[in-house]
Length: 296
Image (cartoon, rainbow, N blue to C red; front, side, top):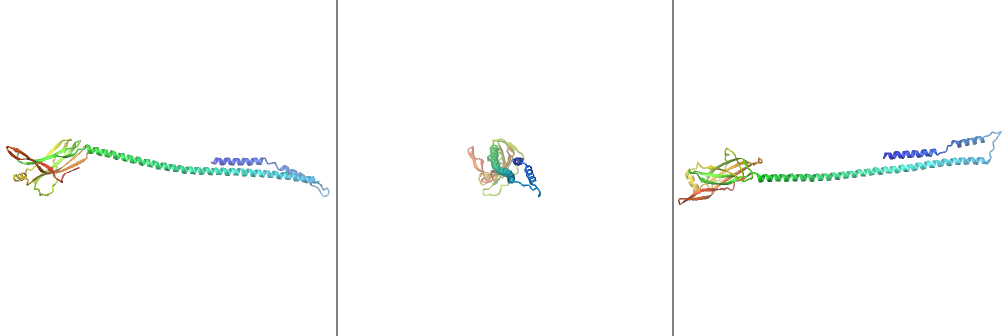
C-alpha cells in the first residue's frame, strides 16, 4: 500500500509544477507600469498632462493582471482540492484494504481454530480406535491363552487295599488343556477321621521331583496308610471312619504363567466284589468335599 501513497504524492507535485509553468511572467507588467509611471512624471515648470484614455488603459491592464492572478489561484486551489480528494480517496481505500486484511486475518484464525478442533476430534477418534483395537487384540490374546493353556485337574481317585493289607488312597492328576503343563509338582497326604471330626487340613510338603504332563495325559499320586492299625482298618470297612486325602499341585503353562490346584476328597461310593461266593468291599471311590477344592 505504500507505493500507492508515493504515486499520489508524485502526481500532486507534477500537477502543481504544471500550474506554475503556465503562469505568465509578472515582470513585463511591472515594466509597463514602471514605464507608464516614468512617462507620466514631470516637474513644476514642465508639467505633464495626460488625457483620460491613459488612465483607462492602465486600469484595464491591472484588471487583466488581477484576473490572471485569480485564474491561476483558482486553478491551483482546484488542483489542490482535486488531489486532496484523491489522497482522501486513496486513504479511504487503504483503510478499507487494511480493514479487509484484518477481517481476512480473523477469518483465517477462525478457520485455523476450526481445523485444529477437527484435527483434535479426528486424533481423539483415532486414539479411541487404536485403544479399542489394542483392547480387542489383548482380549483375543487372553482368550487364546485361556483356550490353549494347560489345565490340571483331578481325573479320579479311590481307596483300595494293597496285597499286604495296607489301604492306599490314590488321586489321578490329569491335563485337560490343549498344551503341556510344565514343572508340575504335587503334594498329598491323608488321614482316617471320624465323620464328626472338624480339624483343619494343613498343606503337606511337595513330592521332591517335577514332571511335565502332556494334554490328555495323567499322573497318579497316592498316600499309603501304613501307620494305621488293623482295628482302624476294620472301622473303615464298618464306615465308622472316613478316609481323607488332600493336597495341592502347582505348574506352569506354555506362556510361563504359574497356576495352582487344591483338592480334598473322602471315600463315599463303595465298590463290591464277589469271590468264592462271598461278597466284600473291593474299593471306595473318592468324592470331593464341599470345600478345599479350587484352581487358578
